[in-house]
Amino acid sequence: MKKIYSLLALMSLFMLSGCSVYNFTGTGNIDAKTFQVNFFQNNADLIEPGIDRTFTLTLQDLIQNQTNLNLVSNSGDLVYEGEIVDYRTTPMTATADQGAFQNRLSIRVHVRFTNKKKEKDDFEKTFEFYYDFPGQGLPTGATLNTAIQVIFERITQDIFNESLAKW
Image (cartoon, rainbow, N blue to C red; front, side, top):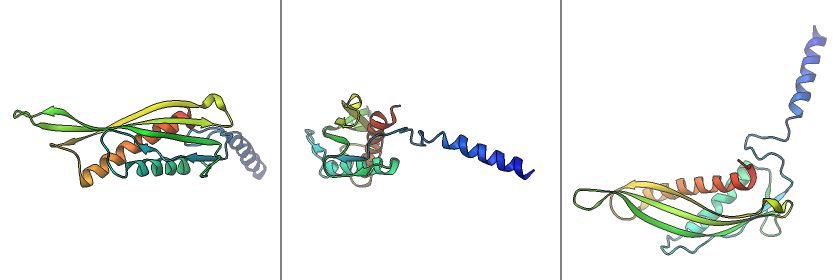
């Protein structure tokens, strides 16, 4: 009986070891060992101070948390660069007195991705997401922080999926 359990355990080990190309993030087999995220300058017409740094750090953190790649400041196997090209608030629904009942903050980021190990994976693309909030005017304080966090989480995940997960 012990031999059967030992045989089953050994077979299970072999079967699981064959699945090493896939992981839970869906990144599959990455040839690269390092990545770099260059500073994403804020070139939008409406400037919100600090979002360029926040975006750059959010993208770095996401890649570090979902891969085994090492972050480097130059000569990375994978290079992410670009700029924030649009930051705008637009009214989505109006009230009876012609005021805004709901507004939308939208941020658009232009990204150039270079894979020095596999050039066919290179791309240049724009990613955009939004956050709806109530009231008039621009979001401030906690509302603004939440909006930027939600938007950047979505945009960075979309960039990750496009560059590494291939979903």
